[in-house]
Length: 273
Image (cartoon, rainbow, N blue to C red; front, side):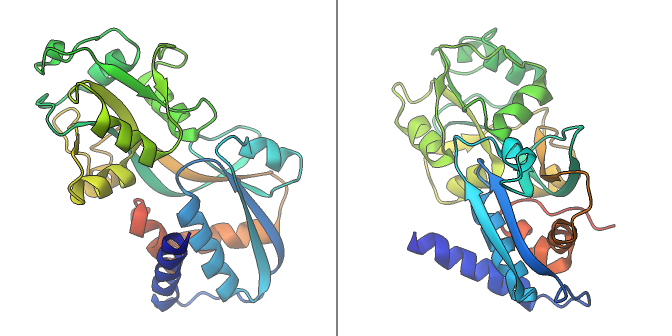
């Protein structure tokens, strides 16, 4: 899409303008990165900036909501999988954080929730908003596809793996989740979990949704970065354990000042060491 390319171009431009002393120009070869979550635009921007810094390196992106990125790495079709949880058989490099926001309609006057209450909502134990001091309407659960890393991280963080009811409506893309929360009748009823980067963006744009505070902490970039908002997932690059110069170079670039500038435009960059 034209808009996506424009945003990526802006991110790449930002990255290459950040002063840094390291050089990656000796890296050469082809690299394939696979994924299925909301990180596609950020990874594409990283790939283009990496190619600019390494004229002899080429990065292809394999991105499909229905794909299984780790399988692609295991079979050699890709060298890096973008994931939200570590796997013992793979080397993991964390390049950032993403909060997981609890999204409701703007008119839902539920003030806040605890992490345990979020677990109870999405495991079906809490069925009405009135149980949380909200409106007297049933809760319509919005779930995500099983293969997406945001769902895996969400279930793991809350200890509810396999407990989300089959009656929950499964929606793939963050944008579609937002539209569903806005349009659900009655509008007070929907509860969804979403990439915090998307949630904060639509709230700031004036869309009729809000993000619930959790354990008296607002879901914001600073609180995700320092861990006060605990419902968060790491952005990980997973690769085979055997050495790969190009994989190591890309991982190093993602953690460098220009790489972190790109990641920080949409997600939460790593804390300064």
